[in-house]
Amino acid sequence: MTFDPIDSLCSADFVKVEHLRALQLIRLQKIVRHAYDNVALFRSRMDERGVKPEHIKTLKDIALLPFFKKIDLRDTYPFGLFAVPQSKIVRLHASSGTTGKPIVVAYTQQDLDIWSEVMGRALAGAGLTRNDIIQVAYGYGLFTGGLGAHAGVEKIGATVVPASVGNTQRQVMLMRDFGVNGICCTPSYFLHLIEQANAAGIDMRELPIRVGIFGAEPWSQGMREQLESGGGIEAFDIYGLSEIIGPGVAVECTEHAGMHVFEDHFYPEIIDPDTGEVLPDGEFGELVLTTLSKYAMPMIRYRTRDLTRIITEPCKCGRTIRRIDRISARSDDMFIIRGVNVFPSQIESALLTVEGVTANYLIILTTENGMDNIELNVEVNENSFSDQVRELEALQKRIAAAVESVIGLRIRIKLVAPKTIARSEGKAKRVIDNRIK
Image (cartoon, rainbow, N blue to C red; front, side, top):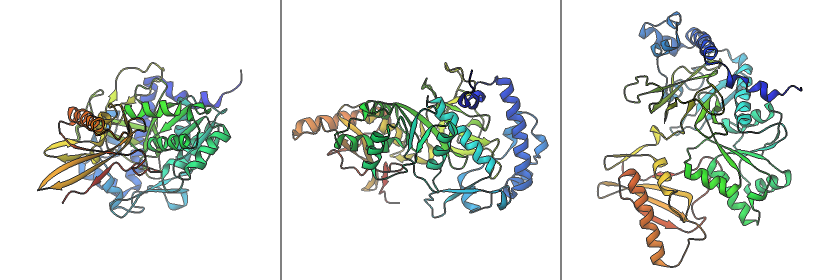
């Protein structure tokens, strides 16, 4: 019997629960001590609470620790949360900052090794092996997506095609000529690849590609159906964020029943986003993550703003690491219209139940006569695009009714011709806020 590195890599996914909990506690105690000794902000917040590292005696004691938020990374820009000397930091990444300054994250060599491990486990869990050719169409550079996925491909011994983003026609050519079996990119970009392939007379469903690993932006079940039917693939949801490590915090297995959290490295909690109270498994709330083994910049009880739940039922795949449900929304993405809380993901889910439209849409928020309004621009697909006004009006009404049934608001629908909404090579921009502030 030959040694299979993938089986060895994924063995932690099937460890006995009591052994996993014991490991988590050891790692939690160690990382709390490390952060307390080396991060001034963490130490001061602990001291304000009268909590010391030695007070962490069980996993439930994590509730004694303070929360951290994205604003803490901005306020300590660039290196204020680093917990090791610069001589031990081998890489820096940064996410784009909407308020001017980016979020900077750091890695030791050990941190990078762990990142490649969890990304390798993610790819292996989707059925990819050393015999596959995998194209990485996330951006390389300061964004964590490209290099994170790249390291995971190499970890499982597969062949990586480091295509990065852009030059979409060339991307399609590489997929066809290299016989690519899997791809890592945003879901919106893969839809764009399908469109470009069709325009070039290439049916993606006839290519060897069979697996897509999609992340970096929220996507719905309706989007999954379009990805799979248009690309002839099996679509997998992957979750991560730069502040924690990058992609590879959680991923779907072939059961597609939630995303397994690699909780030997990332400890998940669900809290009430208003009170901060820890909620029991199974209840929806805000996901909070603690890095158990990332030493350059440990994140303790980081509030992700992502809304989900921990799934209590065992997964049929046999993995013992817990799962989180599909990210239903980001509290940061929510907007309030006429007193109603609305999430873009709700609108997408409703939209994609209507036959005749594509997954390309744009939400425009405006203020008219002192009242906030939503206009939804929707691309009609090639088959449904018609000069018949009656047919288009009927489609508008079906979309409006579908959206109203979900968010409880009647909104303005504007149908636009196929391929007229701008495509993104990275994260899709779904909302334009033109409201009067």
